[in-house]
Length: 328
Ligand code: ATP
Ligand code: MG
Image 1 (cartoon, protein in one colour):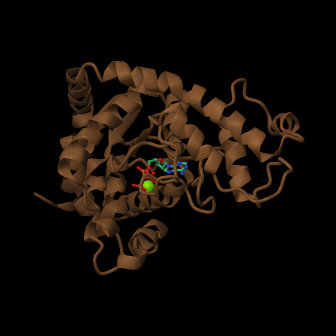
Image 2: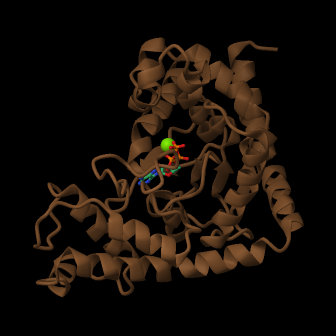
């Protein structure tokens, strides 16, 4: 069974523990192999306005985050989406192949454009077709992502199957690889919505937050007024804190063990313990990040090597697509 993975994150803001638990950590644990490819999807970030200087810095910062979290640069390829022009080109082809009905059903598009339909960019609607191109160019087995991206990976499969049916087999049809736990970390201040880069100041714990900031955000996290500590999905705020605790706690405690540990302690005890495990869990990542920040040339080299390694795969796929479609 193959295990080649493709995944990416937008350099649209600072990385939070949702990105880590839902995506990066799974890349590191399960798909840290020679055949896996991790992208910094800058062309997706510009579907909403970005400050150029900030965007440039965030692309480098995200590269350092990938490595600090444990991706092995001697195995995986890490690259910037816009460094390989085939993404935009295949993205356009997929925009032409995809019915408008499919695109307009995407819940993320509906959410992100909700209160500003007329002002939101055409790119925001077209973004899942570019994402399909990102993935399908590399003929991978699967896409490890958080739960919110499941619908886009399914659209990717539909696009691949439509192309294969109409023009002949050009694409491997990839699987969504989504874990049960951590696939949807919720916002601390609004636990019915997912944690997000684009949320307010107390929405997310950022991977580079200091211990004091982590403490302040967790202690302020929204919970109900109950006392009993149980993994009950109906109690969204409590459930979210317990899940964060579970995923950062050393020694992989089971849910019943965690419930027993906090019996009679109230929410305050759980919050304090969660601060501790998150601070300790992020410490090695922050140390590695600081070390990498001493040599920016190193990061540039990694991005160049990453793109050079995989560009031939993208070129081969696109050339076959164009030939099958009669383009060029
Ligand atoms: P934005 O608000 O700009 O869309 P984002 O936080 O959703 O930012 P993305 O770059 O869109 O981040 O997603 C990167 C990866 O992180 C994807 O695999 C996505 O599924 C995952 N992810 C994002 N938010 C969460 C979350 N709250 N819980 C688990 N996984 C998440
Ligand atoms: Mg997102």
